[in-house]
Image (cartoon, rainbow, N blue to C red; front, side, top):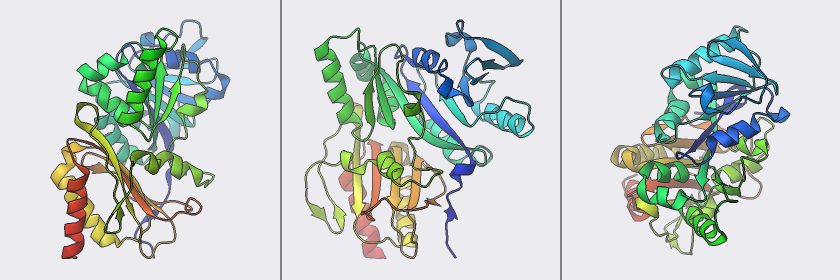
Length: 350
């Protein structure tokens, strides 16, 4: 009997979080993709309809806070707290009171720290019953992005926790400015897919299915979601952990990946992870991993933000050819060596 639940994520509504600093192109992006018929059966959560340029799109009012677009998308304004809106939408969908939709696109405000929203999606029992975090997309302004990263911690965190980074307004920035920003983002978040867009022109499919939970069971999604190798530079070993040096990034934010060659004893690993969360929870911007646990034939996925972690779940299958455990940390003011040393201490005590 497994200690862990099988992956039930295919039964939950996938949520793509769209974040990015003020003026970075979130509204233009939404305005563009909402007109695409491939976005049919999508629910888009925005703060106000007026902030999204929908004037040219045919709209049918289906509720005080909800409109149906010609493309088949549903737009809904966030009423009060996000968790209240999500729970109300789930109830209305279950009761057949909304047009049908299969996925959610959630836009944050430009000044938002994405962490509280990620925490809500990862581990609020009433939310995770109906929704799952599919991935995080962040827009970055090619013209003003570097200055925003210099001056605003929120902009750095938005970019650092993203699974996919969209550099907007590249048509307005000179080549050198765009190249420097791209290099900076690659260093800040080496595991994220990076795309340049003009006027929000992007394949809407890139906004979805960036998480590891693939209903079809395809294992390549796990590797793309984790992208563990991108977080490591150099070579060497520390006990059975692969050790790689990585410098600190913008505004004290960095990333690294711990790789475990042998299957993990879950009790020991879980005690260690609980200790890491207790000691450094405030510094953990995002943690995500795929684990080979003793006694389990399927990979175990964990991910969390600060001290909030999604309950571990078993995926259908392993990525081909590699069953090492990999754990990616995106941190603020937390050295890799401190985390590694805590693991060594745990193993010595075990």
